View 1 (cartoon, rainbow, N blue to C red):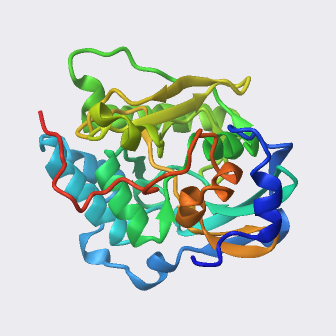
View 2 (cartoon, helix red, strand yellow; view 1 turned 180 degrees about the vertical axis):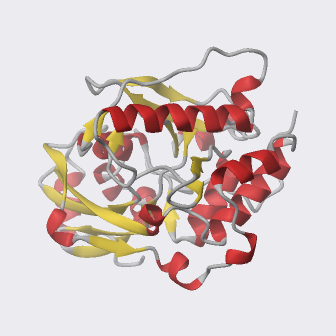
Length: 299
């Protein structure tokens, strides 16, 4: 966006410290209601739709990359719970500016309202879905803001690693069932912002500025009830890796800053405005995982 820099932003934000934090706690804008995800309104192939349990059975013995393809295909066929077909609006103030973002209220899942499984994905598949839905993966800063609006909190439910079990679809389903049981015990429902569910697959400039991690994935979050993340920013897994604890949270790319619309990706790449949506030291060169290039790192 050629006119991305606001004169007031240039004058004010450039003087603010790096790692700018929110001045006021984020909140859900309940008056805004919901916004339909455009993709899901125009792409719906019920002929391929599986329940969450059926999908787990289908992919259980597949390799990582084949399972990724199947997961993307189900989501892009709109086979997701109805709560994931609508964004909810979150607002926060930082550096004197009001920022408005539209966010999916839970992690991407395959299945219907009665039978679904939150599906971990590697960063390349996650980015493919995000691009199709005109969305972005979060930064650690935005993960923090989303956690601030939680309508309920559950204790994290970790599984002990036994060989590669935590990377298997059956473990994804077991984790999903445990999460839902913990939510029910607190009277919480799918479609609410609930803290403690998953780690976020996030964007970070470290992956593009530290060459040894270029073909990796960044994860962050899994918040405890007191608000601190179990997982600090971690970038040592290759992009072939995901496990039951990873989740894909999407943010619509059209955001507002002081009432004016911007592309979130462009804001993340802007040398001044990035501070409103990121606590990185520098702006992004490319605010996405580049799934279209042959840089896949395989075991």
